[in-house]
Image 1 (cartoon, rainbow, N blue to C red):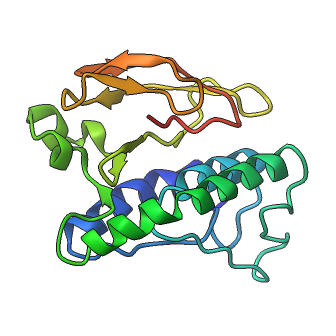
Image 2 (image 1 turned 90 degrees about the vertical axis):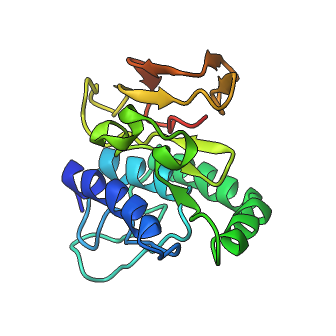
Length: 191
């Protein structure tokens, strides 16, 4: 934890776990030793859209809890914990389906099989059940000092005519790649 590589290798690992027949996958929030406010916040966001979240504490030099890094991280983490709690009926529905069907964290080629989704181009985004497309911020692309950034290479499949930014309501046509998607520190790219 504490560096972007932690997030970067976990996203494809979670996707691969589901493809390997293990629909239940989780890992520590920002690793056991993480302590970077921006990376910890970004890790917390996307893991709200995973089967479960782990928060191990006591190994590193700082406390590892959703409130340990002060404001604004505490408020952002609280928002994503509340969102995960509100989604529990959705999560339980897809957890049951994952017993003998598709995993909850789904590779994009399961949504829309094509040459683009079969490549590594979509390895840093996934479907969470049938209805959520999650495109985590997994690197510092053009971040300012508090972590406001952009997300590039978000692929919106053709399977839906319109994809809706969960937080703003802005609509996007399916079948395109979005670059420079506004991702302030509080916002997970979620459609």
